[in-house]
Image (spheres, rainbow, N blue to C red):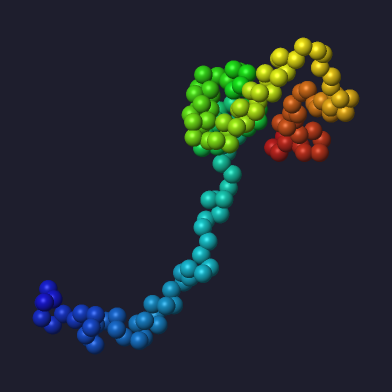
Length: 151
């Protein structure tokens, strides 16, 4: 029934070494406690090689993500690169929400191009557009408030 040599204790025997209550108490006194365990702190450190989406070397569009409004407009206007267009087209095959956004953008584009009269823009919109910065902010120049370390 059991493959053991005669005289060798097994877990059901009273002579089994780990059946002793003192031994069990000794085992529970281990310094490791799962309730207080935490991963090493470096696992939460920022990845210095991470490149944000949309930046040089950054992660591109994933086919499982919805298209951003800018990507929808660029798709409709034919301004995407070949690879971006193919990824967006693949996403549009499976995502009804993004297909609806592309259809709405296409309809708006068609209406704007087919209007015969001049287009009027509300002054409030012109003011909002004029307030948008035309240059990106340089975050690498820290200025006097944030001096670089090591200088």
